[in-house]
Image 1 (cartoon, rainbow, N blue to C red):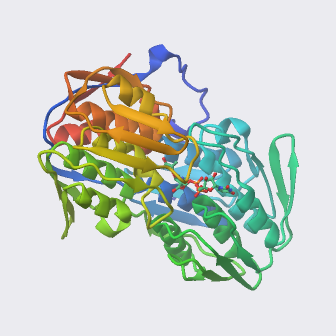
Image 2: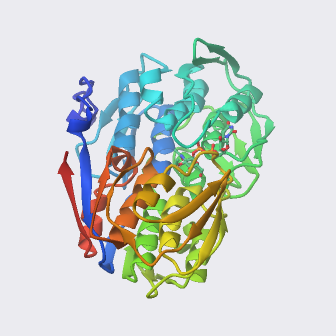
Length: 440
Ligand code: EPU
């Protein structure tokens, strides 16, 4: 039974004062080789679209393996603001019923803190025929337009207008179609897929994103009765249903959290079992870590990573899955900062994803940037310093740098980390790292 009382974390309380004085930071004493095993949580980037997908059906949805992340709370809060009943009292379990929605809007203040809020567009339009979602604007890693989301929904028959910074969309029943994405987009594919499952007739989405999170969303949708084939390939075929039933779904393990531990193990000369990690989800990142000298093996409960004394420099270029994940670029750059030799890194997915570089330089890294290319000349040692970052993965890369730096590193503004890593410092401490959280 769903309660109407919202748990503390998603009640509509006024935001807490967020001055620099209220922020947490991490203190790290570098130099320990990480050893032991660490459990990976549910994937943020699968959890967010799956929460949005609960808007597609009546009744109580049950989602398990839900990670305890700020972004998950934000998504739950967005649905609660629209009138959904949200219950997250049981650890790792989120129950949502979206039967009594009274509002169909994702306001600017929420969307600007979490772009993934735009994922409500497709499902709201499909089930309720209306929605109003703030345009997200640019963010710390790039311009990140949502034109593909809007084109795809328009192709399904939505009437979309942009009014005062908001996307206003209306539709009677959406109609199946063939739509070709002209940019490969993860959340774009997810948004249009969620709309297509309730459209009349067949939809084929071509040049769709292949990311495992898209497959996890498709699995969740199938558990609601959706008819979907081809997810995980470039062509996804959907036969629209008249209605869906609520889902029961366990979120996939977080491949980027897992990859972050893999990088930490490899660069610290450690030996770590990443419990719940699926090596094939790492795509090209696994091969690159091997080329750099780490040993990676899939075992029964996860994968094991053994780092050499010192990694060798390797070049890498980010690309959509199964290419080298842009969400692992900063962490591997941290590894390259202390590798033997020089590496050339190319970021092709986002135009501004080198915000960690000036901070790594403060730690003694030798990195030059020219456009989307970074040349990293490995140094023997990084030196601890105070650093901060403006996005999630950049923050993770600074933590990894701190783990191998000589002396003390303080990573500030870690609310970015809390958006996508649950208790990162506790998990790293469990592997022998000297790391503590404190309030500045
Ligand atoms: N793009 C467009 N038009 C669109 C959509 C995307 O031009 O309509 C461009 C983007 O500007 C970018 C590229 O296409 O240059 C790829 O963007 P994509 O849409 O795939 O990114 P996203 O769906 O907004 C998701 C993840 C990101 C991850 C990227 C790439 C979620 C909630 N977010 O974002 O995760 O970096 O895919 O893999 O799934 C993170 O977790 O730290 C994070 C940023």
